[in-house]
Length: 367
View 1 (cartoon, helix red, strand yellow):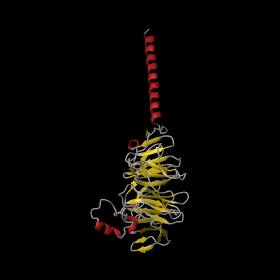
View 2 (cartoon, rainbow, N blue to C red):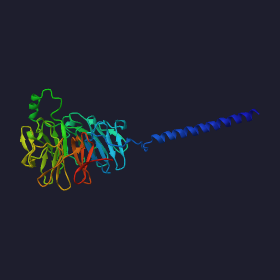
View 3 (tube, rainbow, N blue to C red):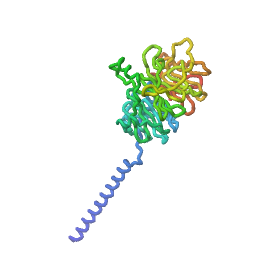
View 4 (tube, helix red, strand yellow):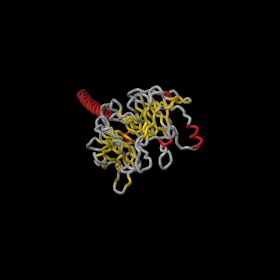
């Protein structure tokens, strides 16, 4: 009798032990499935409209449009829905100053706090090399990406796919003059305001107060002309736009002059100067000299130029055509112009959302 009772108790313990192990294993497997590397956790928040301040537009290799440049994050539009990504999703900072894509389809968001890489599933921050050896890692590889990281860093940042190097410009003769006139300046005269790659893959860097640096893979050269950075109303806005036209001329900030870049740089002191020939560009009839925040060339070779508060100007057959941009009674303040892969032109603004060119005029982009 006692033997049967012991056997019964043993069977009950065995059954409960087996069930316990079964449920425990199932629970562990379920936990692992939720946290396995292959599990994709959707990021971002679905929203119904863009913010009014959208400074930047970018189209990726999958034809998604990205909108950034405010302090609320970056929007992705796939043609159907709009998703907003922010710091809550792993973005290093909500204020975006640049968007690029590498050859593998990864996206990079340039911010004042660093560079965020997005592989379609998660955001990661690029590590920055700030030591003295990194400042001299000037190279020109075809797959490198270049960043500004905001408005107030001395020199650009180069990403070779592994390391993000903070580079340093050679000192030029105007630095001492700047420091004597602006002893308590709140910004760095070497700050990078604009980065441009020309048809030869040479890199151009517009600075806040010290003109333009150019890197051709061998030499870092420099140029400065007062009218390129001084606005018609006075004050310096820095070099914010550089473009190469279909004939190989470089245009910088305004339409008054264009520049033919000659082969050999000119050596003065320790810094080489860009060797160029200045030619007359296009005069704006009846207006003060126009200063352009952003420029692009369309598929027909026409040059399009964006002012801050005086609309868009198009160079067609050596004639400037004006496109006023209005949003009811609101004065639209423009920041950038962008040409997508289909050749469509887009405008980023400070206060009126995004505009799109319909072939005749720019109209507000609505979802």
